[in-house]
Length: 284
Image (cartoon, rainbow, N blue to C red; front, side, top):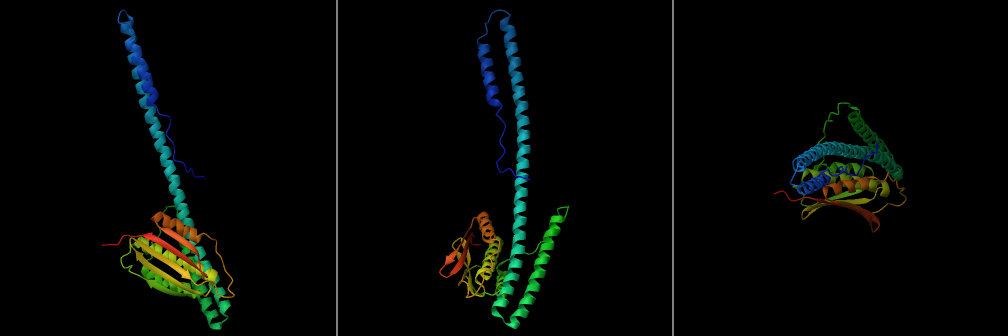
């Protein structure tokens, strides 16, 4: 179903023409001859017409307001439904792209190194990632299939304490990661979740495009901003890139924009760097 992005417009205003009619009636009343039967009948007619116009304007205005409010509510509902569809799309993208991307890159890394021990570890990692991805997909599909619209069981929101696990998952796919944390002990939960999303997406892209290269994760405070980023050393020799759908960085940019932040991603020297600036006032 197509969504109307334009805000509904009100109907034509009722009161300006009604006021114009009242002015005409008033002028006619002032022009009435003060003598004879006309002086009695015509003012009564003009008064009745003025009351009729007033009642008409009141009824028409009320109907227009009710119609406009109904259209506005429908428009808001469509916008909310579209936003929810976009949110679900992003969730599914994150689950599928991240899980399948790690599986592909992990297999490629094992083939790149050629070590038997690493091949066995790669199979174990692929099985674990596959199970996790399948579980998350089932959870999401259960939510979509639930006719009651009941909220799914919530997982704890990711925080900076989850960064080691995110880095560990990325290192299994190939890159060697170092982490540099600044004064970020009092960051709000929303900003911490955004930092985790940025680091995960950037490290996944590093694994896809650069293979078992070196990468640096940094998170620091810059005034009322949290700066989080990942910078890699570029692709290793002989590595074949495994690009994804190309929506991950754009999705991150949209999320950060909604938070009032920014995302910059570009080539730096031989590598690639992703830097996010997230608004965050220090908690006192």
